[in-house]
Length: 486
Image 1 (cartoon, rainbow, N blue to C red):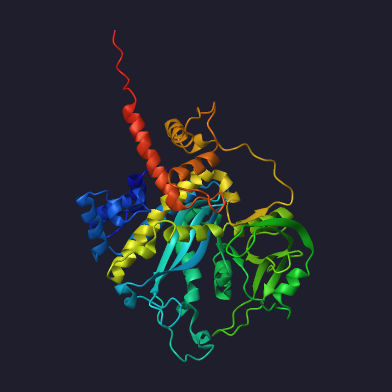
Image 2: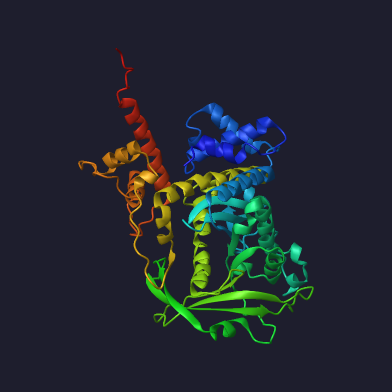
């Protein structure tokens, strides 16, 4: 994993802010926060007044506009993905909100809460790069930050249908895909855009088809077909391809369970006639359905209906589409990492909107090394640690455990062993990455009280910080090798 200075230089050294000193200040700010992403800005500066002054001058300088910083960082991460992903690249889109209650809240936007709520904020629409082979997060390839205007009381129902598509909030899906497509350059043909039900917008799907962009979109609407049928009954009537098991973890009041899903797939033609301003052309689309068989009493049945440009000519191809959609939980992990479980954007207390957005962008990029650290320790096992996990109908042959030496140096894992396995001699061969992940998190105070086996980002980063301090102390204490004399 890159050090914080190398990471910041890779992302922002080419940011075109109009003044080299502004760019250098931005790189220094990102370097400081990337070294301590779960702490406050003051903690990230480690008591150095000059570093603190540089960081806050960057945040407060009106010439430090966020658009060049977003563009430079996203281009750097797109280049990294094109270089490091030998096969397909997943680009997952989602929207989240950040809410605030302090004095700047009055200048922010409506978050859809109660009318008397003091919590206001902004929305972030993220397109996140993921390596489908390892489920490792690489980072955002597009960020759109927006402040939603207040709702107009008494607005006629259906009036939004008279707004041109480019003026609607749903245009964000097309804008995100278009920006990412331009940044990926020659690697664009390897990119698959993945999104949830909110993106089931016919204009967006037609845009993807017209620009030869690959996609997997979860269906929200039982759309009318060109031959007067409807989408859901037609796909359910197609032949069952196979059955798979979906492992659903416990969350809130939902019990953990294994759901058995019947898998179907077919090709349909969606009718372009709609209630929008203009009649749209029809859309030929592949449809994959996964529907739970005999759900337990009282449990809402699991159902995914996926619209895709990917082929469905074999059972393995159909299952691949389902696995691609299963990666979507990683963008929820990223948003969580930017919120309460990582860089904690909602604790920012900047007093102007511009300063707040600059600080938020800084935090969004500083969250990336946190994701990288977790991926380094999880490795390919990260596919087994989501809240929803899709299994093959025939179990794969178990792979050999991934050794921690693929993520840690010898001195790092030996120091980690002595710090967490007190009194036990080191094993004859390095332990697994699964052990290293748990050990680093335990060093940071993780107790696995929920029995999930998935440490949070704060404990993981605290443990990593402590480990590096211990390794540095060990290296200083080792006797220096003396030059040979004759």
